[in-house]
Length: 213
Image 1 (cartoon, rainbow, N blue to C red):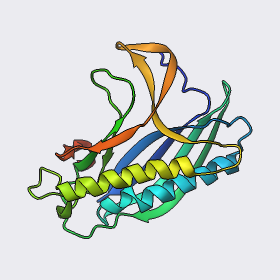
Image 2: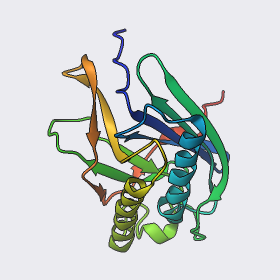
Image 3: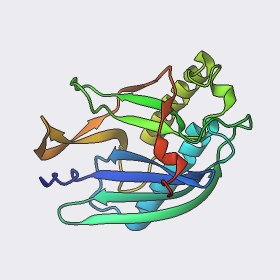
């Protein structure tokens, strides 16, 4: 299998994980910093915890109370081969108390970038959909879509405003490792310019858990 290029220097891979009715979920993001070479593990952890707290106060507010957010991990890529890694644990939970939809149901956020191409656009799949967010178990209500869009935009802005010493000008985005079905020579960071919420619910069957004989 072809080897993918290394994540660009100054980019942190941030993974948030939790569970929904006992089954795991995960969201992965990338954040680029302008200044980063002098950053310490303590500073990276401060940033991770602030980013997680903002995630809880925005996007988690659209998840059901049975969705928990329990772990965060950040890997900051410094000059090769160095990588700074920190982890934190949390006790966050969703806020919506209405009856839950299927474990597999999710809101789909499509992040906008300046590049234009077919397929492979950055998306975030939010678990914990409840009846308040859908009128027919299939479509996202316009009110929910608008509120979720606004909170996603607010979360992106919150991240940009996080000021941590030696980690300056954070920008939320994604990393492109491939082009034309082949690995890039050098991975590219692409900042998010906006976000849309799909009008239809998404599904992720793995959130039902493993198959059993």
